[in-house]
Amino acid sequence: MDLDDNFPAAKRIITEIQNIVNSDSKLKEFDLVIQPESQNKSPVIYVDHCLGLESWCVRHVYEYVYQRLISIRKRLKRQVSNDTIPLLTSALLINPEVLTFWNMRRELILDGYLKPDDELQFSAVVLSFKPKCAEIFTYRRWIFFNILKDFSSNHIILNELTIGLTAAAGYPSNYNAWNHCYWFIQKSLEQENYSLISHQWEQTKTWCSEHVSDHSCMQYRQRLLKCLVADKKCLQHLECCTSKSILRFFNSDERHKLMRPSEDYFDEAIGVALDELYFNEDLIVMYQNHESLWNHRRFLCYLLVDIYNIDCIKEALMNNERRVSTKLSKSNELYVKKHVLWLQTALCIPIKLL
Image (cartoon, rainbow, N blue to C red):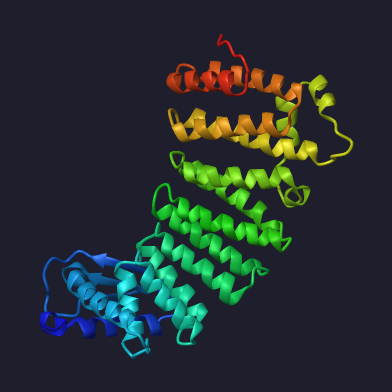
């Protein structure tokens, strides 16, 4: 039996969805609307640039589009029919984790049937429904790398970074979203555009304050921090004041030992790392017993010792971590013990709590 006979409304539904996608350049969201039974009206809902599909018809529509798309894919001569794009649109809105369907859209872009800018818009709508879907992020990067080939515009990259942050907020521990952001940061650095990394450093500080249990953003900041301390040009656009952190962390004798005439940015680089260390301490004080914060702190301690392999840094770090561990031993007892043990075994920093 033909699938049209099983669900004759399928073709009308996918056509309606495609018409909305084509006509609304400001379409921003897609989602399923819980409705277990048909209401004798169109299951496609469209309000304020948001598209929805009632849940009762999802299985029937997906079976319809899937069977036809697989049939198209198996043909020796893959001629593009009028139905191919609407079928792909509905299929990917419902289930964007099928790589074959994204590959079919890649071919349609290369053959001129789909426009890259329209595809960025469409994939952003799909991302609103599945914010952790790796295939969507891969598709967007493919468009930029192979079709648009433009990483010089701050506006374009900032838009991608915003889309990444929005997706990260829509799904916890969204490493795919943060990896997508970092890919664009790398491309901007290759173009010697150093302002965006500073922008992300400041913006994600607020994000981390609001998502203290989510280590994925902290890992992203770790990657940004490595770039910042490795290259003077990356530090030039930072607005934070690092001198206060240096004065707070080192005594006068230790600060004198830090001087490196051949590296005039050394104080500023270590100051950025120390700023993050004190920011992390503030979060631990405010939000007790969050493992992600302590894991991030261990990274910062390791970075200070590994990159700036100077005895005075190790000594100052020992004094600072003793102070922090003593201060937090009651409210974060388990994590303090783990942290002290890690300092002793990994960094050879002996700490005795008072």
